[in-house]
Image (cartoon, rainbow, N blue to C red):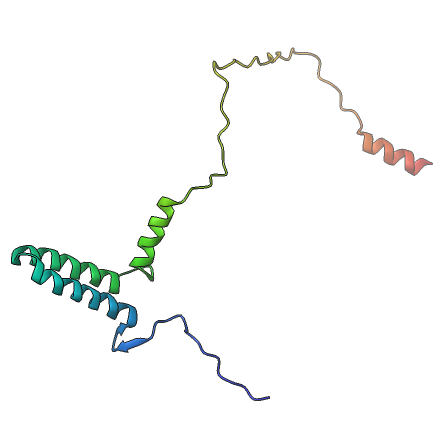
Length: 133
């Protein structure tokens, strides 16, 4: 039977050029298009502030990772966690109010008495009874 090579590392994104993947390329192109339109709409100093912010944000989205997970996945996960309902399984039992004191039995003091003599254990008596019968 002929063996074929099994593809490995198929979870990695394909690269367009050198180190930029399709996803990263489109983030940067989208930021560039947004900055292009802002250049004609906004005054120059406001364009530099807003355009720089957009471009830095796109660069962080394109290249930033936290523990190997892209920043966009982390942001979408945080939004999903915030918007969806939570399921709590542990519920604290409420204590009755006002608190009721628990009455405890008093420990009696052992009076001094003559020392008890050692008794043969039940196991020894049973062994003796079996051996003698």
